[in-house]
Image 1 (cartoon, each protein chain N blue to C red):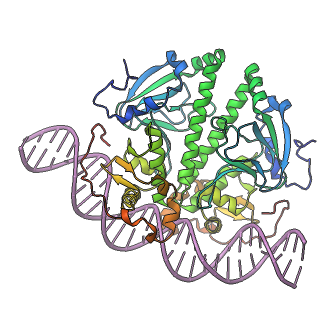
Image 2: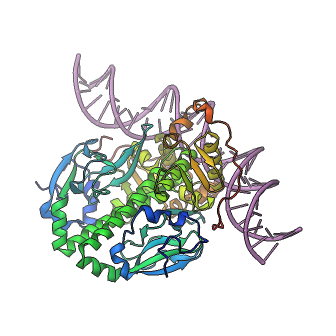
Length: 259
Length: 259
DNA sequence: CGAGCCGTTGAGTTCATTCAAACAGGGTGG
DNA sequence: CCACCCTGTTTGAATGAACTCAACGGCTCG
């Protein structure tokens, strides 16, 4: 099966593979150990508190690492895109559950024991593991900074920028969101309604354009990055030329996601 | 200098060393490489975007890893207590700055290059590095869960529980906060006033007792853990017997921190 | 004793949430 | 083909929560 090839399945949207061109497989040297598994949306990749048997890498699609609270709310701790590595737990146990966030998510699984023996014999493999772990830590820190922003508009804007950076090879001017508003809400610790409102606010302020419900064009990244200040001050401070609604027709320009 | 000994400096408060008994030095095998440095409150341990030269371990005291936003606000990404390891950056550079949060914080520094050669020759050292890295990741995930809670009272309560777990060897019933309200605020992305109000709220609800400004007794950990639900419902649901104010005299039972 | 820092409390405003309703698009079945 | 349902998304109104600005008390240090 040729799941690594970008054009493997023509029915899948492009963004699921776009990143493969941008970044190399971070576990390239361990690839002989890998077995691939395909998951449907919502399907568990592993459960909370399960034992660590494999390291995992997203080949295509998206997965969410999350925890369920006592009140039923869900906190997504990490959003896993193609070539993101996950599955190293704490003391042999997974602290969080992981499940596919879109249909047809493909995960490459590397048995932990064999991976470790390989790493012991090949330093470069050990370095790749280390690097993958560092990347995962960087994602967590980025999320903390996003959660730390003051207003919901700033959080959502920051989220868009980070997603654009991760999804695109070139300049982060446009992006196709791979996940639903629900997932964004649980990722940013906001309500779905607030996420939706923040997006329309960002659009009204001329910082983004909404081409489709999930297709977004980033107009003013710097202003988004500093959105805290602007929302704190009076709203006269917005650039006047951008205040008119960019009323693009809201036709869906793509297929392949079923929310 | 015998900084490892719990009674090295009688003027230092007990909690700075309490944890040494609870958890072993996670870089024990690398100790021959270590050099110790003492920092005063607010002093930089390393700067943002500096090159990674050493891994670090808190011997005694507290440090904060943080980033400054454009609006001047500060987000503390990690709070470092005795025997916490930090300083592994992303691609050779530190993404955040670290500075001492209390006077007399002692840090053991392990030169990166020598540490790596040692790890290459001794598998147990490599395992210790791996374990330390995993611990750091666990701290980040815990913070994300804390930041993800709905109300400020839930955030602060959750913070107290996690700090009690980290600071004490026994049951997490009491703790002596090692940091100021300001630091808590920047850690939880709240304002100082809200932190203060949340503490008095938790006290009023009978979930904690405030013995001193920094000495706290945890009365009902389970209720704190589920605080989201209670604050969401009506406030008649609180245990009636605990609603009377526990008006202990607010004398300071300890010295050694100057905010 | 005054200055300065830390912590708490109050008043008013802004912001996010809940509850509710409405809309759009995809898919299925009559 | 159209009606219908289901999911996901958007918007409105009202409530509740956190923030800012401000003032005050306690404590330490000079």
